[in-house]
Length: 181
Image 1 (cartoon, rainbow, N blue to C red):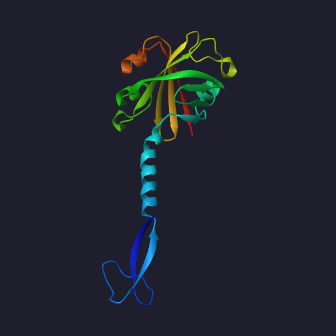
Image 2: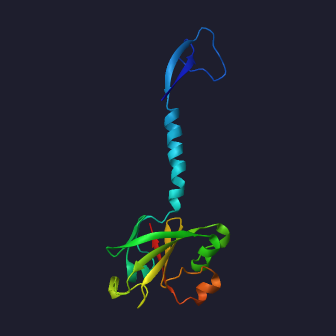
Image 3: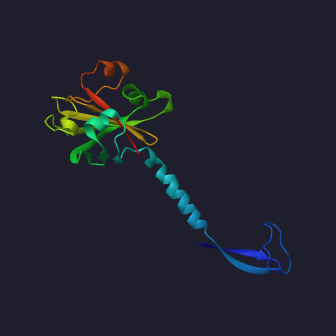
């Protein structure tokens, strides 16, 4: 709290800023300036958190409802259908790369994240489905727009190439899934 001295007239009414009434009384008033500054800093610092893929995400698309169900992403793991898998961030995806794999406007400047993940082909999820058929899932790309998370899973030991041409011809793209909060 910051203590501010406020001038009041003899009748106790507050003075207009910039005007001084001779013979006025001084009154100490608490002004929560530091509280307001602290709140502003907390809100400002939390803005980058709005577009992150971490946290619990309920399934929103038919593929997500049929295969993975709800997912949860943390710094070190992804949880699909109550099973956790190790997750390592490989790199950030540029807007053109996000646009190549997800339905995103390249001019909007949206970025995504590529993760290294290992989900064995033997792991069955909802309705006995797998993520990549008979191949192990090796990569996961994410993109957040508002309250929607889009996820693409890839097989193959090499990182996917994120261009329109490469994605359209890719045999490593296992599927895309949508989740919403």
